[in-house]
Amino acid sequence: MKKVICSEKAPGAIGPYSQAIEANGMVFVSGQLPIDASTGQMAEGIEAQARQSLENIKHILEEAGLTMADIVKTTVFLQDMSLFAGMNGVYATYFDGAFPARSAVAVKALPKDALVEIECIAAR
Image 1 (cartoon, helix red, strand yellow):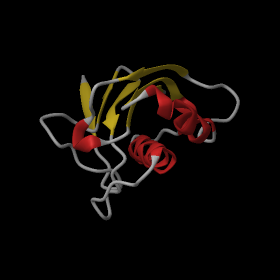
Image 2 (cartoon, one colour):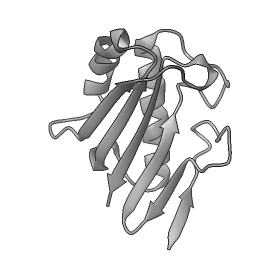
Image 3 (cartoon, one colour):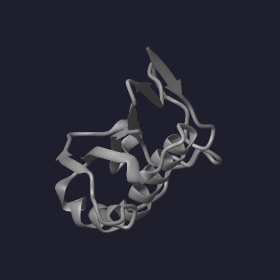
C-alpha cells in the first residue's frame, strides 16, 4: 500500500507526480527544484538553490514524520559539474555524521532552468 506525502511548505508538483510517496517504510521524495513555496520564486546562485532544494526535502520529510537523518540515498542533478563544489558545501551542512549514499550527475537542462534538483529516499 502506498501513501501520498504532501507539504504546503514545499512547492507543489509541476506535473503529474506526487511530492513524495511512502511504501513499505520507505519514503521516495521527488526531485525538488529550488523554489520557495511561499513566494514561488527561485533562489539565485548554486549555494542558495542547493539550500532551497534541501529545505524543500526537509519540509516534505517532516510531513512524513521523518528528518534528514532518515535519508539513505540522494541523487543530485546539476546543470553543470562546475557547480558541484558550491552544492557540496551546502549539502554537507544538512547531515550530521552518517551521510547518505549519493549520486551526482550533470544534465543537459533542468525544469525552469534551475541549477540543481535533488531527490532522495528515506527509511523509517
